[in-house]
Image (cartoon, rainbow, N blue to C red; front, top):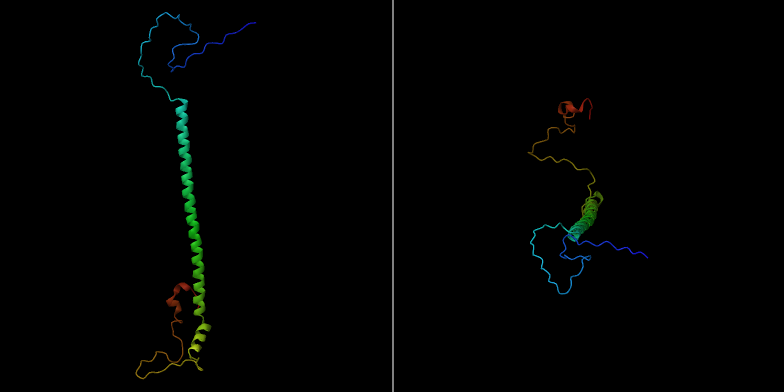
Length: 163
């Protein structure tokens, strides 16, 4: 039976261990020399752990920002819905008041209110009363004014049409 030995593992480039598996042990009575302390100022690149943590923080920040944005958006939409509901209610109130005003101003209601107050309609149409000493109208024969005859001078933009 043949056995194959596995290759020896190398230490990582930044590790502090100086011994490897493949080295033999020293006998118990021999003196060992302490390695000289070397101070190195080596900038280590960001490890996978630090980069992963940074990416996780950025991702969490982006998600929280998106949630806050959606919350504000939803609040503003709720405010718009509330305002639209209020506008609809006020429009209904306006239409009801407009209907009431038109009913109150209708001729039938005015006549009815006048009759309730004791007023009656005259049998004959209203007549012009002449007051002594008051100036008389220029035309008192019932004819219309003559401005309609000169309508083309008054409104030349109307063309040859006659009112």
